[in-house]
Image (cartoon, rainbow, N blue to C red; front, top):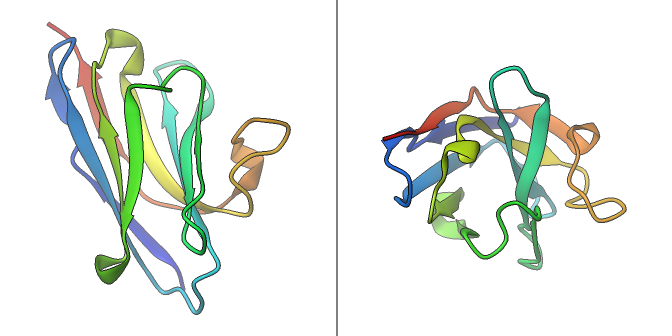
Length: 126
């Protein structure tokens, strides 16, 4: 059974940085993808970024391109989301999830998600 555990959230000032981690376990092969989603208060869950374990290909949503970087540490079965130049619009609960595909018609959507982590809160405020 796949398990995902997020960590690294917190309170940060605008312009600051955070690095989120998603520790994964329970995979039976290396053919999987991990996506990051976020949910702001009162809004739906948005696909932010995604990485393929097998070939390292990545996806970024338009709102985070150039500011966020996704990476993986295969030895630790962990996926990271480095978030720079944060702004208040980045506030929300961030979830990692296994996904069937990183993008469909140019977007990472909730429909692709399979197993979810519990989420970690990111608050960008002065």
